[in-house]
Image (tube, rainbow, N blue to C red; front, side):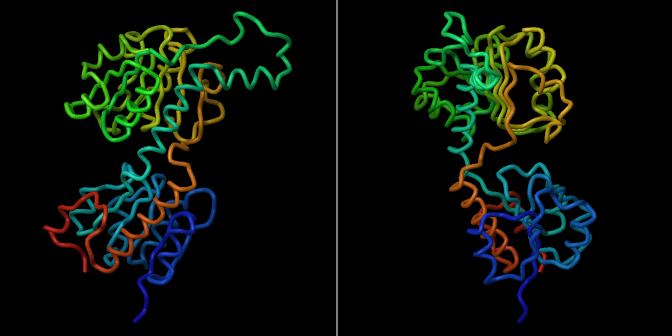
Length: 330
């Protein structure tokens, strides 16, 4: 019996590929840049499953290109790139990689908070430019982290881990979420507040919510106007939650103190973006989950979802479990 054919839309860590080789016939896109849309449409016509990334749009057109497509395994926690209702309607289970990157992402978010508060990028640039001549009382002074107020937008797994790290710095923790979590509040000394209160009282605002119609450009000019002039925004969730034009205006005018972004709109950020001209805006290239151990585990989880899908078994981490009640493709 021939092996199922699968397309892997990027070169994932070997830990995942090794799991796949004994089970499926692999077609791996090894270029650094994502496969073009036409390539995805061509590849999907001959495969039983696909491992996609956030950069790969998995919509009805892709799903209808091959009635044999049995599983979409997303190498990510998020799945903004996948049309979930379309997949469910066609009997295609969709997998993701939740949980594994919670701590790693929170680590990066807190790293960005600290780096921005203490003006680390500006200090590096200052030294490299040969400007460091002596010690000075007012040289590159930043904001204290210990004892400050952290406002967390979205109190899911990553938001809670951000609060846990804040506890170590004796920070006051506020959070805004549509769902209250009393147990987490007690464990993490966090207080549920409305969004306006969070924006008004926080020294740092860290974004950990999903991207939805309601959260798109949630942080815009009106939101920035409510914040402290020294406040710093950290975004490791999704770029479009923060309006980039309004953010530039707020940073340039001194309406807020700074920003540290792991995600941008658009992504990657264009080199002519005005945000890149600002010393108080720190931007890194979507590396929140980029630890060796975490990326390897993500590859293993993506592979496990794919293998289960091509075998007609339930995915270990399925985004649309209702698909099994409706009936999956055989």
